[in-house]
Amino acid sequence: MTSLRKQLILFVAVMIIAGTAYAQAPPATFKAGVGRRDITPKEPLPMWGYGARHDALSTGVLDPLQATALVIQAGDQKLAIVGLDLGRSPAEHSLQEIRRRIKAEAGIEYSFIAGSHTHHGPVLELVDEPGKGKGRFDAALRYYKYLEDSIVAAVLEANTRLVPARMATASVQLQGFNRNRHTRLEPKPSDRDLAVMRFDDMAGHQVAILVNFAAHPTSIPAETLKFSADYVGALRAEIEKQTGATAIFMQGASGDQSTDRGNKDYTQYGKALASESITLAESVRCQPVEQPSLKVMEERIKFSSRIDFSNPMVINLYQKAFFPELIPNFVDEYRDGIRPRLTVALLNGDIALVGASGEFFSNHAIRLKQLARVRQVFFFGYSNGYHQYFPTIEAVAEGGYGADNRVSPVAIGAGEQLMDTALRWIYELMGLIK
Image (cartoon, rainbow, N blue to C red; front, side, top):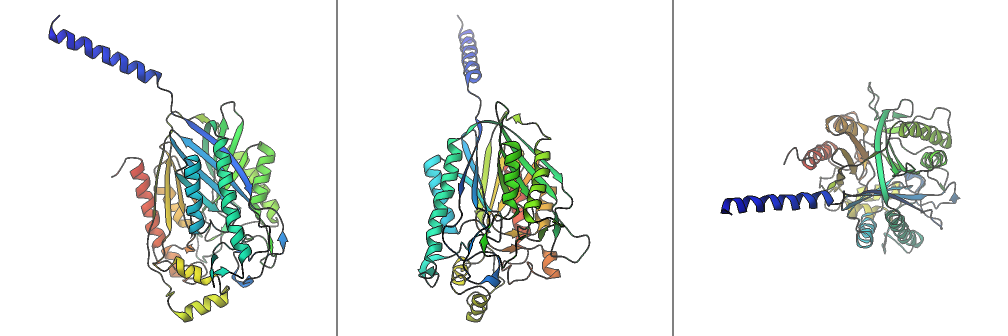
């Protein structure tokens, strides 16, 4: 047998073996699972969202606060998406502890942990130090440990309930449910996208419906010192009653977006939004994910501050507007500038999830969705931290609440820079630019 013939036979044999091995390789895994825990404080705590309350303690509960977790496994990567009935996501030290634990205990490397922005949740910024919470607000400090444990438990439950899944996404422009509360200029921008992400098991049973919409949950009077999930609780309950799926709500870019409730109270509004969400979710058919994948980029990006937090007079004004123990914690957070966290995930090659740690005006999300050439973009505000308002440049030029430096200390143009970064990352994750 000639040397050339031997080499040819060997090459053919290797290719046959390789082809057989490839054919026998198991398909990549795509799974989804859900979990939930009650996160309602058990003791009276100062409430988040309205400065005029100062340090007044809660007096009860209108409806329970919950942490709802969705864990997605795509190939060998896992992602946790956690919707919280809180004004914001947990403070940085709590966030990092939660992330450390879910990585160690469940191998979950990436997460979007976000508040719904209800203004009837507890203050989350206090710490165990004199003058910053210790002594006066020890109940709040006890709650933070309970909150961490509960979020971790919800995520771990979702991880243990992972099942092979199919999925679908959809969005619709929804009229009459939100409005721009900031600008006086026409046309007033509003992100009217109602977006859903639906997961079914392989038998066709609905596992989860994620709802993404932008509208401030400020439907209950500030004078009501009782905990409530606002319209989000009613929305979830209605979806779960009608579909049997676990519902997760993720707030959008609602910095300048109020609910447009008409004569509806917050429970009626939540049910009406749930009805629209169910109709949208049931308009699509969940499909197998042939090539599951998950790629994530995340960074804290530093900007200068429009407020001099080293000025005692400024600190005194903020302490009077809110309450003394709260402000030193903001000073600590902003000591090295305003450092929002941006998280971008590309799921299955064509679904972009963008999370940002603040109250972004709607035009940020609208423009990002227009420019990102993917099947769908989900924008999660109040995610993985909280750094107050991010108005657009034109909103700062107009002025008004949410655009002024009292509640938006970050440098002008920071929101645009973050959205440009998110857009670049999406294209990088898609392999379109380097």
